[in-house]
Length: 111
Image (cartoon, rainbow, N blue to C red; front, side, top):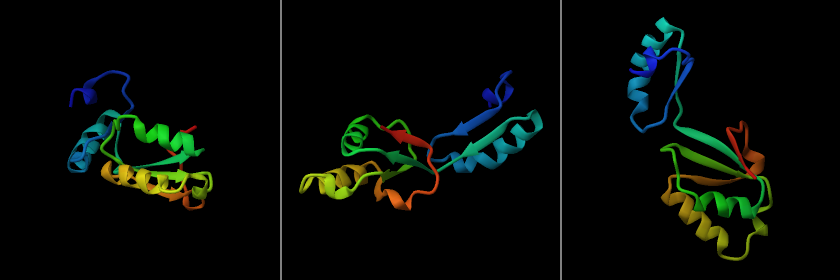
């Protein structure tokens, strides 16, 4: 609510699990003030290398969103057993490791 009354704000992104419940009403209030209110439950991340995948999954997750991790490399480049470990870690975070050819849109790049 505070952001809806802040000068200069043009977009508010709701990045919390129950944000979808608030999006409609906050969107209506935002429309009256010329502010767009957005809610997204997932984000698409292009992952450029095995090292980038490992590094990205080691970082603390700063969003509740499901991350679709589209690998722009051959998954067979990962040592035996490492893919399974990385998939288990991603799964615990609510994320998915996917083949790069499935990617449609990109929100972020892990380089």
